[in-house]
Image (cartoon, rainbow, N blue to C red; front, side, top):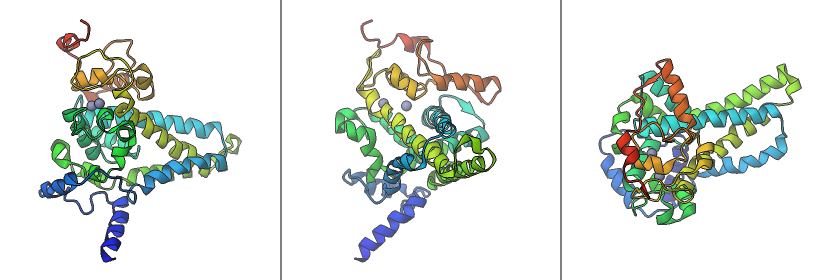
Length: 323
Ligand SMILES: [Zn+2]
Ligand SMILES: [Zn+2]
């Protein structure tokens, strides 16, 4: 009884402090690592209640009604946060494919955190793990190893994948501001949700012609947009290893897909990316649309980012299928 109570209270605490009960912040994380990773894969239902509740909350669209301004807010937040995930969490924190200042790094981390895909350290560490073991038995989200559902969403809910695997992101874990964001990963998404609500309240008061209000802005602007963002991002782990064409003979099942590249601002060129992950560019040719890369190039004009790593000519020619 007491053990069950302790487990439940720990689950609640971890909604707010994702590091509670782990030793991410100490050098003894090896011990937790052994406990976590020897456990069988299973969904931690208590811990994922907020994630499931967010999905169910999409149904509130029928209660709050529709307005164009709320839809546009949702689409804008989708695009801005997708950029933060692909350019920030993925290309910067996971692969160090370009450089920026410490402030620039923090801005990318906060914007990425607002997507509610946990903290930058958790995201980058799990992604580095994926590249090391792509489609091998150890891969945490391979559709060829554990099935499509698991690669898309199951692995995110798995109790063995909650720990931030700090040992894989020591380069960024030395920044206290990033550790803070990673530990209290619910903070930024909650602030964004509240801000959207207040924005809707303000519009209702000062621009009633737009026909929106706080609840509508919260549901369309934050909830629906965040759920679309989850599944847009997750397609890279699931569909981009199943659906599309292969240009390079990589040791995994990664594929290139124009459609996935469109909804993920460039991440659909996943076979390219597995072939040469160090590049900030995933569309290797001008016809391979890669919006995140274009935005990074644009930001580099103002000196906000620099050392954007290109694809070397030898990488373009190596291991080509049918060449
Ligand atoms: Zn992959
Ligand atoms: Zn990657």
